[in-house]
Length: 147
Image 1: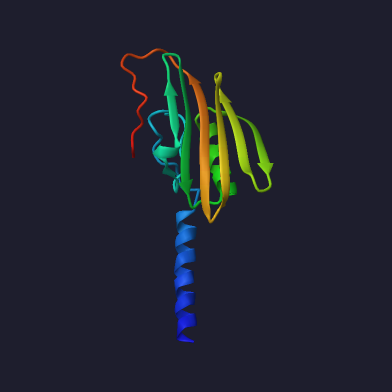
Image 2: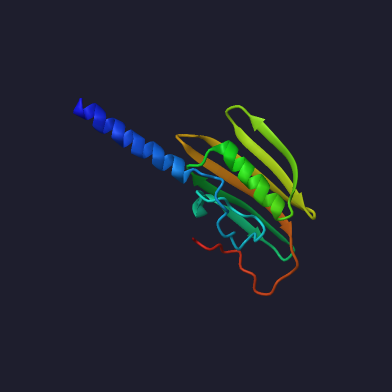
């Protein structure tokens, strides 16, 4: 009886922790410097080793990968509302069973695709694919901040 009660208490603590961590309705954290108008909801951690960034004098493109314990549908809503607040125009959402959510946005000739996959053991993977036209900058560095 005591083992069952202890297990129940630990499961309750674990589930409460997961719910608190996974709240995607929290205000977005500060944006990454590579793309200052793409806010990232709280609860996601940037995966530098899985991400790519390409920068030329006129185009900046990237595939930025994040993971976290955030429910996919609420995360999709958080991305849509925060991106629209930054001037991104919502284009479409594709929902495919077992494959995740894909949202497409555009802003002034720039494109952004948000892929949300929450199939892996309560861990959600978010992949942002963005292409932005830029003006040439002096001494621009494509090396991301490792935070």
